[in-house]
Image (tube, helix red, strand yellow):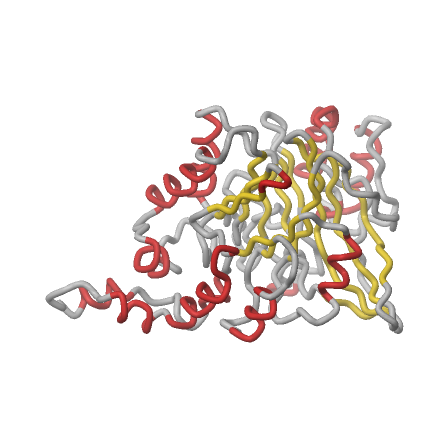
Length: 382
C-alpha cells in the first residue's frame, strides 16, 4: 500500500537516510532529497568499492549531511592491518603517518574528501535542528570478529579492540550539547535485535542463524543509557533487505525496523539494495525517512521517490508510524513474528492477536513485512 508522505514536523527534524548505495547514485538524487524536504541527509556507507569520484559527488551534495564509510568503502585497503604487518615482520619501529596514509590510501582519500561530514568514531552537531549525529565504528563488517576492518580502527583512529570502540562511541554520545537530540549512525546495527535470519541484523548467508550486530555499538548504547542518555534513533545499513537464497531457500525479506519496548529507541535499517527500481517508464529511488520531535521518533517510512522526465518528483511512501503508546502492541506483533513458521501462519496470528489500532497489510508476503513499527508495507516483488 502506498501513501503520500506527510509534511515534515514543524518543530522537529526530518532525516533522509540513504542506505547502501553500491554505486546506485545519480544526478537525480539531489532533486529527490529536495522533494523529501529533509533537514539532514544521512548516508550509512557502502558507497561504491572505494570509488573516489562517487564519494566526491556525495561530498558536494549541497545539503546538511553526515556520512559513515562501510566495509565496501575499504574493500581493497581495509582488509589488512598495517600495524600487524609491521609486527609480523619484526620491524623495529611503528609505521609513520606517511606509511599509514599510503597503506590505507583508498580509505584515507575518501576521508579527506568527506572531511567533517564523516562521523565515524566522531560526531557532527546540527545547531539549527538541535540534533547531533554520532558515528559508530566505520568500515564495520558486523559480528564479533574484530579482525575484519581492524586495521582502519587501529591505524587511523587508534582504536584497538571492541572495548575501546565502545568507549569511543559512548563518549561522543554522552558529550553532545545539553538539550540536543542524539541520533547514532553506523554502517551496521547493534547486537541484541534478534537471532533469526530475517531479524534486522540476522545472519542469512549461511545455514546457521545468528546475530550479526556490532557488539561495541550495543555496549555504547547501554553505557550511555546508564549515564542517563537514551538515544531515540539508531540508523544503519549493511544487512540487505533481500535475504540470501542459499541452498534454494525461497525469496524472503528482512525485518527493517525494530523498537525497544523499554527505551523507545527505534532502529532503522536502510539497506534496500538496489536502491533504484524501474517500474514501466518510471525510475524510482529509495530512501528511509525519519521524523523526530522533542527527542522522540514520530514517523518513519521506507520511501520511493519517482523522478519525472522533466525534473518533477512525486513521493510514494510506506508509512511506519512510531509512537510510545504502541509499544505494548509492538511486543505482541513481534511475538507473533518469532513464533510463526510460515507467512500464512504469521498473518493469522497477527490478525488474531494484534489490537485494533495495528493495521496489517493484506499483501504481506514475508515475515519482514511486519516489523514492530510498520503499519503498511511498500516492499513488493516486482
